[in-house]
Image (cartoon, rainbow, N blue to C red; front, top):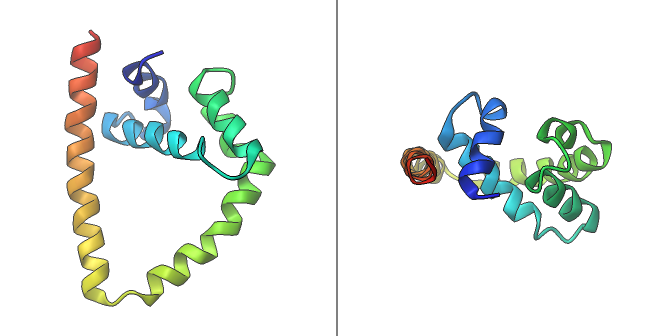
Length: 111
């Protein structure tokens, strides 16, 4: 499967936003690098079509691992000043637009 195929398959979970679907696809790639072998295997299973994305989101093991990291994220976020937060938000918005453009290009190239 190509990245464009993965984007198409993830569209329903991304509100039919190709940019979000591309970010989900790339997040799954990062999960494939997790130190947790179960998380790596689940991400690989989603990307190869052996596991539905919905099943990943409802998996107790996946939720346990991700829930352990949420407090760390909020601690780091809370430690930032307002200017740093604004910069991160602006960078995220710019990245979102780049992802939408990239997803559109992938879909055109795959057609």
